[in-house]
Every structure is written in structure tokens, then in C-alpha cells.
Length: 255
Length: 313
Image (cartoon, rainbow over all chains, first blue to last red; front, side, top):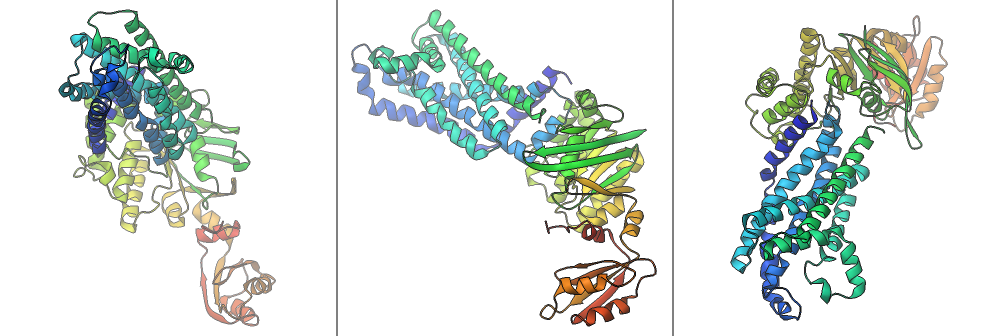
């Protein structure tokens, strides 16, 4: 079985099954709605600070909520893999003559596509709060692709942890690591308004560049180096995620 | 030609030696049973044979191929249905079989056809479009077996295929296994700790205990090695010191062994050994005997002789 066919079959299987777990859909809608409502009401005055790039704080916050949603939509990937390992279904796949990378990639691409759908949902939920994408259709596509990169990267890391530990508790506990990755960025505050120490950490966080790219798509019509940095960082993260999960899957064959 | 050959397999998990020394030779078209109590090393052995675990030492050949070198080729030739019943609960039966057929390389239309054939063959047509998570235990085992057969494998590994099934579902699965072997000539290696299952299905058996093959042969040969006759004595719990009674009985000429059990003593009598009433008479000098039966040996008695009985480890 070729790598592409196996990946395609496993991708479609995962996509087919997403709607069969109803709480995922509820979560996908409720969380961004809550965050927009909360921040646009509670923190509207923040945007009046000197040096703030927009008047609408919710508009500024859009990348943070897109990235947050991408992380949360990917959080379940490792847990799902642990359950498949424990149920024995993963062994069934492992006993098939298919490339190990296709088992990983089929699942991660599905998570990426779901993250794109969820990002689109976030943009729809954001509309009543006056949030727009200045980059138009191209901007929306760019935002969705960056969201997919974050989700694939995180799902890959969580899958690796799931395969290494085989413990649902360990994977559940590790999901909280996405909080520093999401919040130690320029998602909620411009870099210039942070202390120098925090600025260093924020600059070192690859998610910051994705956040900046999403913001650039939403605030500017043109393309700039910020977009390029965002895709370079997003793609690198996604590749690392896929590589780590594939390594952990291949490692099972050496035990 | 041998379908499955294992030579001196060994596997440890950290300090625990799961498989100490297992060698097997299963001919093409044979149903071979791997029998042993829980924790004996059966599942680890099957996982090594089925390319899911690497042996620490020893060699495996599946239809002449070495899984360490030709892993993909070996995987094309074999099907597995594991103890944990690895199924995708969110998929419908039809989706599950079609996907598996695709992953084994069948073209899309043929994969759908093959899924339909297997659903019909295993009596799952009515449940075909229901999610596997809603299936009963018996249906889950059948879809699991069906999914192992989508690519018509030459060798099938079944690990504890009927654990937890009611007698009717068990008999149905046995029928399916026999048909598969008879009609397709598929070589089947199954593990079980059910004596009846081993006896009914497998032409030859290997008894595995503490990671080693301790006996091998047909069911009749293995039973003959245990004893000519088995006398089971039920003793009064309050009066009896069962190990002491067992020692007295073991000293009788012609008694191969006498094993204390929670209910009394089981006595394995050899050719020309004492009759049941003679055994009972000796036992009555030591304790109050409340019942005595004499039977041909069963494979259950094998576990007693290997030192462990199911659930007593």
C-alpha cells in the first residue's frame, strides 16, 4: 500500500468520525464565543493604551483566540491515540503493511483540517463583534493555514507523548503546556508594552510569529515579511510535530 | 512447508522475563493451539510472531520469510485478531472492513465488495451500518475476525478469541475458525486458556508455562502424559489437612502425583495403578471424604501438573 493512499484513507476515516463525537462541536463554538464576549466587554479599555495598534481590543485579540482554538482542537489527538493503543486498534494498524508515517500523518492532517474549519467558525463568531479580515479571501485562507500548522504541530507533540507514555493521565496533564505557548506571545498585548525579560521569551516562542502573521492578515491588506516569518515558523512547527509523532510510532517497531 | 517457525524465542520487559524459551513449528494448513494459564507468555509469543514485538533473542519465520528483514511482506501474508479486540468503535462495521481492505491494498470497488462478502459470511449484514461500539461481545469478536481476513491471509493469529463470550457466541466463532481452515486452507495459531477450545479446534497443541513450552502434541497425547485416570476426592474442610492427605496418597504405588486443591485432592493414577475405591480408602485414614469421582484426564489436569492452574498465579 502506497504512503499516499494509506494516508488518504486514514485521513478520510478520521474526518468521517469527527462529527460522531458531539461534545467537540459544542466546544468548538462555545469557547471562542465566550472569549470574544468576555474580552470585548471586560477589556475594551486596554485598546486605549498608547501604542496600541487597533481601537477594537477584540480585533487585536483575534489571533490569540484562533491560536487558542487550534491548540484546544489538537489537544485530544494524543489522548485519542492512547485510547487506540490501549484498545488494541493501533496494533491492528501496526500489523498492516502500511508506512508508519501514514498512520501518523492521516490523523494529523485531519486535525489540521478540523482546525481550519474551527478557525473559520471563530471568524464567523467574531463578525458580530465588529472583527474583520482586512486581507480579504486571501487573508482568511492564510489565517486558516496558519491555524492548521499550529494544530498539526501540537497534535504531533501530543501524539508523541501518547505513544511514549501510553498514559491518558500523562497526556491530559501535558495539554496544559499549550497555555504558556499561547499566552507568552503578542496575542493579548503588543511587544512594546511588555517588560524586557518577557519580551525575550515571547520572541523565542515560535507561536508568536504565527500570531503576528494572523494579525497581519486581519489588519493589513498587503503581504509583508511578517507573513513570511509566520509561515516559516508555522511550517517548521508542523514538520517538527509530524517528525516527533512518526519517530514515536516507528519506535514501537523496535521494542 | 512450515507456515510458522519460532526458534528459542526470548523476551523480557525490564526485569520480567515474559518469554524464556519458546520454539514452535506449525505446518501450513494446520490449526495450532498455544495453551497456558494467564501470564504464561502466550500473548507475548503471538505478538513476536505477528511482527508487533521484537524478540530479544531467537528467530521467527513466517512462510519462510524473516519478519526482521521482510516485515512488510510478512504483514501482507498474515491477519491478527488480538485479545484486546482492537476495533474502531466510531466506525460502522462496513466502514471498518472497507478501510482495512483498502489498507491491505484492495482497489476501492473490490474493498467494498470484500467488506460485503465478510459481513454476509459472519452474519453481520443487519448490523453493517451500525457503529461497532454498539455491537455485542459476540458481534465484536466476529467483526474482529472478519477484519483480520479482508486480504485472505495465509496465516492468522488469534489471541484468546473467545474470552468473555457466552457458549452460543463461542460455538459460532469456533465454527467460523474451522470453516476458514477447511475452506481456505488458512494456517491458524490460536492462544487460549480454555481447555475445551484447544481440544475442539487445534490439531496440535503446545502448553506454555512461565515462558517455556512444557509439552507439545495432540490433545490425546498430552492427556495421556498426564495420567491414565484422574481420581478427584472432595474432603471435609474442617477435618482435612489437604497437603498431608496428598502426601499420603502420592506414596501409593501406581500414583503418579496427588495434588491438593481448595476442595480436596486430585490424584493422577498411572497404568496399573489403584482403583478409585482404593484411593478413597487411603484418604479416609487421613480425612473425611465427602465425595470421590474417577474420570479420564482432561487438559485441565495439564495445568495442575504444570504447577499452576488458571487464576492461581
